[in-house]
Length: 198
Image 1 (cartoon, rainbow, N blue to C red):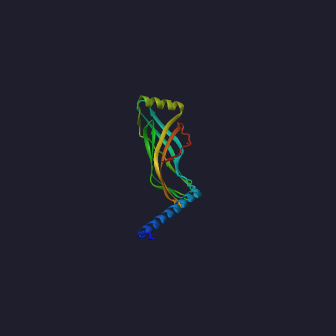
Image 2 (tube, helix red, strand yellow; image 1 turned 60 degrees about the horizontal axis):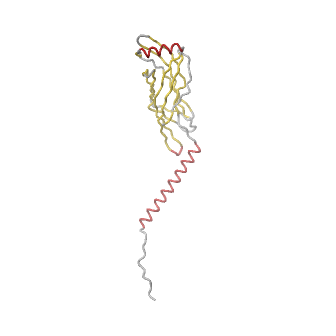
Image 3 (tube, helix red, strand yellow; image 1 turned 60 degrees about the vertical axis):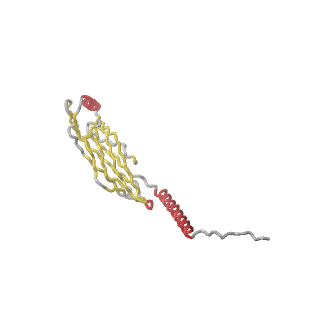
């Protein structure tokens, strides 16, 4: 009876085995690192630092019905870091204070740090240059004075960064968009207004 013919056996190249082992090791390392990061995130539950308006007041109003408006406003901006074990840093803080779309002043801060589970307050007392008024703006100012309240907008951004345990460093741009309704008699108000991360 004739014996079946058999060809030479194919052997897998050792380089392919090495590549497969390396890929498997990398995959296991990625899975383990992902699990560590996820568990760390669940344990620490980090929160994004915030920036907001702690208080504001309209200190002075100078209104010439035929030409211009000048105001002085006190604004206290509060940077908050609710993370119990992470220090946060803020930089590039630029906020624009406006009245009826016209910029009154820019509130700017250099880089600063906020300790873990702490806050830092930035005090600004900007005084506008005379704001030219057209008939519509002058009528709006007159109406605001009759109501004893003037409306302002405070908009801007800041960048925050903080370290989350083994997860690493996190960075966010924070965006502030506040409407300030300020009594003309100088009463301090406490707006509920804070940033949104993007």
